Image 1 (cartoon, helix red, strand yellow):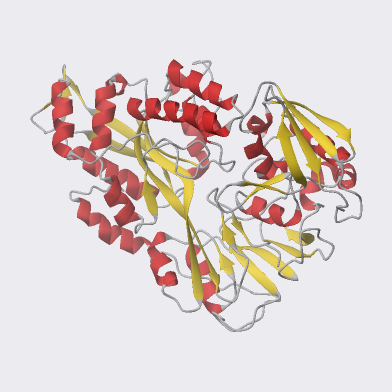
Image 2: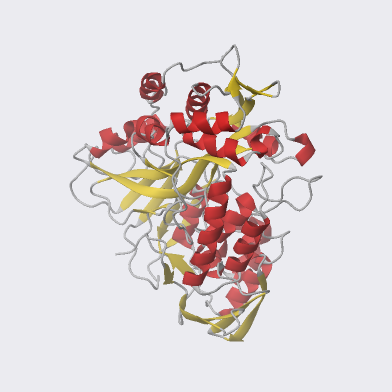
Length: 542
């Protein structure tokens, strides 16, 4: 059913109603103890109610598996060479230290010694070389091959030293090694289970798999021999609870100890609870409305910039997201590696109208802008239920563009078919605008800019990454390519910043917001962190 919003203030009522549509369902809580909403004694076992089901712990598999839940459980079982801290700084993990050659292509990693996999076999250079060499094979690494493509080979120097050789200098290598696809399984387990390793994960991490029920739950128990300290809990259960109201009810009743994906409509209520801690972290997932560069109207940069000034982004964040978000000032979100503030398209209706009038657009009898007998009319595609408040955001954009004389028709697409509907050859593009969100789980701004804005190589084929609106700027391409070959992080950021400013000024999107990652936990649960890259981690040690 079509809806129209004649006044932006009407969104408030819709947004408030959105938080009341799902009735909570009961959640069993096997093995969990403690009073509802307990603030008393610390527990020795916890339940993490996740919004996405875990279907596999195969770190080389396709996402989602489910994403992000599969990685959240995998991080409890495995380690990698490098890891992120909660500010996305790189920290040693199975590699105690590393260095880079003068030409920026050879990275040497000194491995932690005396570490055992959970099956009793030794962690060493052979384990690293074995799995990372497999990750260079796109038929094996089906989930994250683009992160690994810049690597040429992995070499064993000795039992405790490996070298990773990149094809060219590659400044994003540490981001790849901190990603979930770089977690290291036991070589013996890989040989034993092969393609079924996702159901039989064996790592070096603080927790050992106890039981996996794909699509339902994963239970892990403490690895008492863990090299990084004593695990905080004897047992952790990752349980799928897809309905947000049910997750919140479970947390309030004590049937769950940690939940993720808290809807913004209920965040303030949980924040005020004396027995619950709300964890609110600015995230890296950026949202905007992609503008089809094949549309003759949208090929005019003045029009694209004017559309950016027509949208009340601050009001969207405040009203639809209750302030749990950040208005974009760059194609990248703050905290992304390489972020530089690129500008600010402030809301200014008079400026917008003047820009469009100067470009030759005048209001017709029906109030819709016209030029050369052609109306400024667009089809806006949005997924339905894939992103928080996605349809309402699309309707808000439609309403505010109508206020300046732009006609927008919304095309809602089921989330199961959304990706395939936008990644099509240039001649088959059947939309003018797309509401889209991109989350860089690697935290790498260079990869993100490349994925979203690099010129597509062949108009007769699907975009190889996420440049579905067919944007192209050779100068930006060159800067991103040069940045990705720069291992000096400050020089790399400077180059990416130049590219960000060019892309921002080109306005291939109506830039909107970066959403916050919101989770919650009982106050008597310790060691929970939420990373800007989206993961809620519950496996910290004491």
